[in-house]
Every structure is written in structure tokens, then in C-alpha cells.
Length: 441
Ligand code: PLP
Image (cartoon, rainbow, N blue to C red; front, side, top):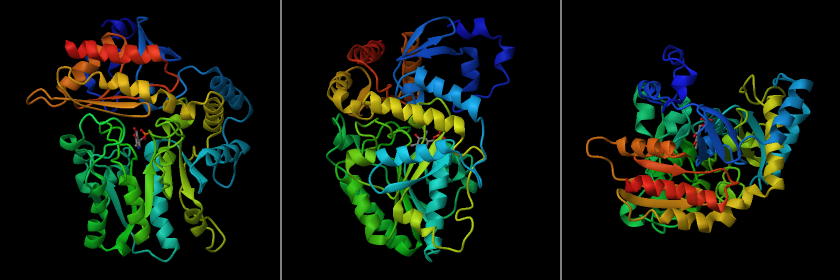
């Protein structure tokens, strides 16, 4: 692959420290993207790459949307920045109203952040503060889940459950955090189409943690409705409902991290609606601006918000960011939501889900394939690791797909697919046919 070498010398590649990337390998064999439009990227040497992962689960309306470009450009010319403390601009209110309009009923207030990680830490802080505001300051314990990904802030890695993301900082994680078991059970559920039939009882582990720690010590439970970064774990049927019931029984807040499931990925605007379970707090980012501008949001229920509105006059929540509700990001998000609405993208995954599922499960039986799982426009493909080299097979498949013009996402030996929601049938075929050819070797 000559692309980056033509564009940048080895020494020019040195200064930039890439996140979540084997830097030395990357710099010996760089992959540089130069432009993007619709379903495709183009590399620096002009190769067309089908985007099978919506960038990083965020470009839901496809690349290069003119309406977003125009809205951001116009915004920059009229109001480039507005301080978000003690001040606001109309775009922030318009966006909050638009979000609550499409959100699950009852989530009616919005706090803006700049990323998924910030949304998660904000949600955890709101949950802790909520209990204090209500005179239940003993509720300080947070419950996450094994294999969860909630970004990279200290709160997020504490409730998260991906070992390498925590190991280096194990001495500095939040105290008083416990974890539910993950729901991945390939011995019982391999090759399930949609929600696995077995495993709802894993939610009852929350009762065990309540018995162990005492409900009066527990503030919140946070889960991804579908765990993405850990390799696409679809919730067993009835599991999320059971979590909701147990939280209600014990006065524990339920937080859904919808950073990747939000904005149409599952076939409904949000996974909460798709699965019929409404959390008390919901974290968003990524698809909020179609990946064009860094922005996140935390939606909270009326009851959560209301708890903060009864104290003495003054600042109700000592939290916020210089770039909360940044005008540029609000403009990008409003233009994005308008596209989603106009093109029916928040429910398009539902109409494509059957053909997507069919194409994904054709990989069953190919070399190394241990499991295929899917929901909406998401698919996970679990591969048998090469002995003593975990992750090597997944990385090899990722590189070979890229060489053949398809971008996929790899976590260890699991491949995740989550294309822009504008994908057409022929592109679904191209995606899975390329994967199939690579797996056949
Ligand atoms: N939460 C979930 C479920 C995610 O998938 C991610 C990112 O992939 C995050 C949080 C963190 O988002 P960000 O990378 O924008 O901080």
C-alpha cells in the first residue's frame, strides 16, 4: 500500500500519536483517507472504499451531506461561538426541542457535551447528584457490566468492562463500582438472528448485587442496549425489561448508553423505543451530528431534571463544558436531524433488516466463523482466534478487506459492521461478498 508514503514522509508521520491504534504498525503501513461522499471513502492514492462502519458508527446519513456543510458554514459566519455558562443561543434550544421530540417519551431535558465519553461521565455525575438532591446521598455506587464500553473518561472506564481499557489505570478507577455479567453466551445463542432467546435471567444478577451492597447504596446501572465496541452483543429477549423492573423496585436509575444505538441504527430512532424500555437517562453522541462535529448529549427524564429544580436559587448543577451546545455543533446536529427526518433514516434500518440479516448469515459455515449475530443495521462476526495470537486473525481480515476496498471494524477477533443507513442492497452484497472472499482466503 503506497498511499501515505506518497503523501507523507516517514518523519512527517512521527508526531501524531494515533488513538486506539498500533502506532508502529500503522506508520509502517499507513492508511490515509482523503475524501468521502455517500457510502464511500477515497484513499490518498484514489482507491474507493465502501464504508461498512459509518466511519465509527457515526456517519448515519452518509458522507459529505451538503445540507450539513451549508448549515455549519452559515453558522460560522453568523455566530462562531457563544459562551454556554450564563448565556445561550437559539440553536441550543431548538436542538434540545428536536431531540426531545424524537426521544423516548418522558426523556424531556437535554444536557450537551462534546463526545460519548463526556456524555457518560455527565450521566454518571447527574445520577449521583440526583440522589443527593433527593436526600439519598448514600446512593453512591454505580453498576456497569462486563465487556461494556462507555468511552475513556475515568467514569466511563470504571463502569466499563473491557480489561485492556482499564488495566493501566486500575489503581485510579472510581471506588464503589460493581459489574453485571455480560450477556454473551455463544454456547446457547450462536447464530441467533435478532435478539437471542436465552439469557434474560442474567438481569437477575442485579438483584444479587442489590442484596450484596444494599439498594440504599446504589445510584445507577448503566448498560449499552446493544454492546458495540466489545463485539456486538445483542440483549437477550426480556433482559432489558427485567433490568428496568429491578431498577424500579429498588429506586435505582437506569442509564442507557445509546452512543452507537441512537439515531436509527436499530430500526427505531433509539434502541429504547425499539426494545420498549425507557431509561431514566440516555447518553448520545456520534450520529447526533452525522460525525461532522464533535457533540454529545445526555437526555434525562422529567423526574431526574425536576429533582434539581427545587433547591435554593442558583446554579443547579456544577458541571458543563466550554463547548457545551457549541453553535457550530448545534447547526450540524439540526441539519443532520432534518436529513434523518426527510429521508426516513431513523426507521430505514427496519426495512433493510431482513436482507441485511440474510446476507450476514450467509457467512455461517465459512472458515473460522464461530458466530454471526445481527440487529437492525448491525452485524457481528466472531472468528476463531489464531492459537496464542488473539486478535491477529481479526486484524488480518480487517487489512485484507481494506485492500479489497471495504472498511470494516475489528475488535480482537470480532468484526463489527454498521454501515451508513443510506446503504443500498447492492452495497450490502458487496460488503458481505468481500468479507466472504477474504474469509475463504
Ligand atoms: N459509549 C459507547 C457505547 C460507545 O460506543 C462509545 C464510542 O464508541 C463511547 C461511549 C465513547 O464515545 P466517544 O469516543 O465519542 O468519547
